[in-house]
Amino acid sequence: MTRARQIGTIIVTIVILVLIGYVLYTNFKPEPLPEYNVTEIKLGDIQSTYETTGTVVSDNTEAYTAITGVKVTAVNVKVGDSVKAGDVLAQFDVSTLNSQLKEYKTAYDKALKAYNDSVSATNTAKQNKANAAAQMNTVNAEIDRLEKEIKAAEDAKSQTTPDTPEYSQEQLDALIQKLKDSGFSKEEIDKIIESLKNSSGGITKEDIESAIANATATKKLELAQKQSQKQMLEAQLSLYEAQSDETASSIYKNVMEQKKADYESYKALVDSMKNGWVASSDGLVTEVNLVAGQAFTPKASKSTTTDLSSIMKYVSGNNDMTSVLSDIIGSVTDSNASSGTGITLENTNEFVAEFSVGKYDILSIKVGQRVKVSSLGSDYEGEVIYVSATASESSSLDISTIASTFTGGSSSLSNGALVRVKIKNPDEKIIIGFDVDIKIDTEKIENVMVLPIDAVVTEDSTNFVYVVDENNKVSKREITVGRFSDDNYELLTGVEQGERVVDNPKTSMAEGDKIAIKK
Image 1 (cartoon, one colour):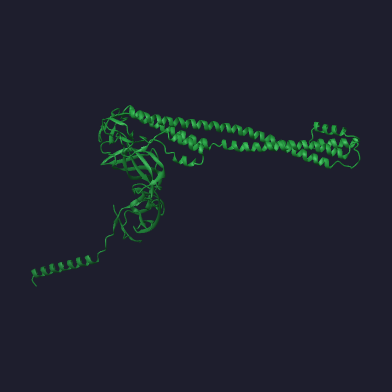
Image 2: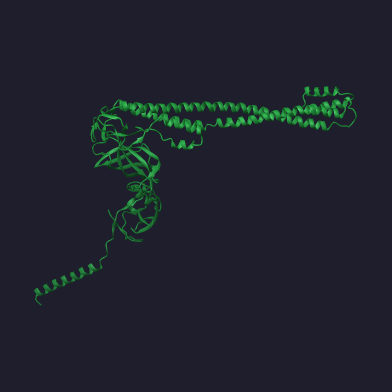
């Protein structure tokens, strides 16, 4: 074989061996380990936040109310106009309202008089009741005394023994003492003794029984008189009890207060229109329901007088009260007794964002908390100015309620409490009726174990992490977490401080897998 052929054979052999080696390497080379970032569990802080969206509204919406039928003499604005504080919005001729205002004043005066008369009558009845009760106590005491004396006298009469033809002085003295012990007065005993002295012959048992019987008859007559007086007092007490009941006064007071409020409210409306409507602050006109030269007719009207029909039903069985109240209520006629919104002005210098918060987050929202408000790419400072104490129906879903599922909580979409956030230094990107993003820093906890949110795997409402040992093998651990921030959970149990966990583990990761750690 020539040298050239030898060299060629060697080259071919080397190529064949390289190809065989490449094929073998390709088929049998080890799979590279998956690379992950890992986080060492350390102590840190958790700044909890609440994120949601809110609707922008004016912090001061002023609705100017006009009375039905008032003549509009001038309207100086239209919807969309911007006005300054002090600008005159509209003017009226209120002369047609004077008669109606007088009717409101008449109704109030009648209600006030009815209330004062009722209070006076009630106070008089209470005093009469107290006097009658005092007399009743005295009469009851006298009846009790007389009944006891009569019983004692009858007992003494039945005990006039021994049965002898005549009483000795010693026996007579004993009888006198018994009568004293029975409650007989000295005058009554003296009368009995005097009547006995007038008897012919000696004092016999029959004489004594007759004298005691005569004295007892007087007491019985007095007792009958006292019992009759007691019956009269009982009748008087029943009458005064009914008259001193404050229910009627309470009803009259309620009517009087309502009629006072009706009169003062109506007068305030008349006065405001008499002077013309003036803007109390800078703002944007969002509603105008007035036409110059025409009588005002509201789109939606409300009564300017209180509906007292329920009170009338309550007193329907009392003819006197029904008559008085009917006269009071009838003092205001139905004509022009209604009002409606003439102009609505939104204050454009002060805006708030409103949203509802669920029961799992309401306790973390406090008045005074700082807020970040975002709208159309701009951020604004804000402050929580109102948290409702009652819940209303809501169907909002926010980030915090979604995140609560990771901590074992559940989101309730059935109701929520209203929260209002004041937006500081608003500009043209804060628009009434538009949504804005809300982020509230709620609670901050310090020096707790911190776990990245993306390290947590949730299966069937149970949270797990993959812990990496010194040989870079992973083990699956169940954990419990507490409060959370945008990036981290508070780690309660399952992993110790200093251990490492896998960030963003793949779903294919399994117990005992070995990983490569990214540098």
